[in-house]
Image (spheres, rainbow, N blue to C red):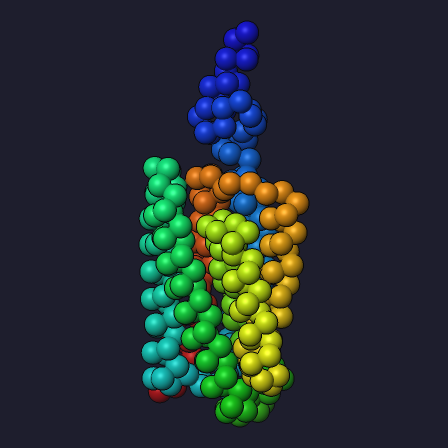
Length: 257
């Protein structure tokens, strides 16, 4: 009887009365799962950051292609992500209050800042590619061809994570209503964006995200609660934190003097 009472109290403490779920170290299991995923993902970004740093230190001729225009653009991108962290926190707080309308509004604001970051980053990529930069070469230091590969891999991996985060938040905020919007963006982008444009490659990521989101929403439909919003916030803050390492390492330390 005492055990049953403790289980009920633990369930109520997690907002899941009637559906007891054993916590790990007093944490909700979805949160533990997200922390484990982020721990493994941090190893990936850690390896990429180490590879970029090692190449930069071991090559005295490492290029510094980022002038005022690129630094300004990257600073605005950073401001977008920092602002998105604030709106994400406000969204989590609104979810804990049970205010679904403002939860949706704050998540939508977070998605808007994330989308702005993606667009600005795509424009930066377009600018560098137009100057002749590729994953295998760059016009500033031909003797250091790996600069392009390390740059595109590191920033591209981060941009993919931001894209996944925007889709993730859209699913949490709007559920099945988000699918037609995502489908419309994917179809419009596929047919309207030229095949040789940087943004055309991102459209494929949206297509995959649409398929995965549809599978999740139709196989396991549910109303996402405050715990789901909090877990999505953990992912979003991790993505923002990674950029705080990329911005100074890749941009500020490679500024053209």
